[in-house]
Length: 204
Image 1 (tube, rainbow, N blue to C red):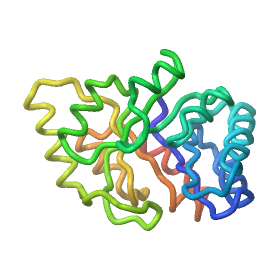
Image 2: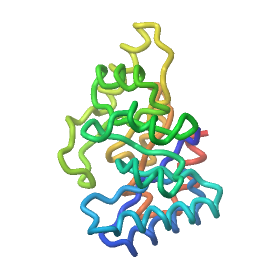
Image 3: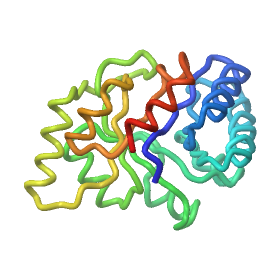
Image 4: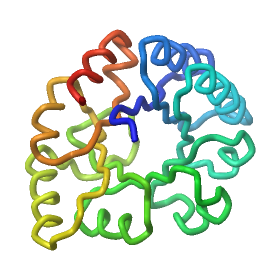
């Protein structure tokens, strides 16, 4: 599984599409299409376009929350929050070969996501981020360290955990030392798509 995920940003569909295109142009190989409060069928249209773009770049395209849209456009998978559809229901709809990621904020969340057989876990937020409404309690590096240590204490094999929420390039080294698998980045890549190369180098 790729270690860098770009979570799309943009107020309009045109903004979203432009940012996704720039991220792909700069070498990102995994897009999570996320557009909260999208008007009407705009999100569906964005997802359809994103899937086409990702296919052209041989990149992974997953959809935030909307399992039905993911099925309709044959996306590579979905990312689910706790208020979204259950992983079991999503797996039934999408099939065994699709990627299903799940949000987590605590050790209990991580254990639940592991029990649900999520393909990866988005654990966060690392720090405060304005891109997400109703932000869960901020974990910080210490929060990640404690969760990873508790998983090791239980002799559990570490799942593929992605740090999410305000992550920037300079965080990567410490996150990897802690035992985090990858990062999901939104703001820094949207503002500076060329930084993707440095992220990929740091995550090798």
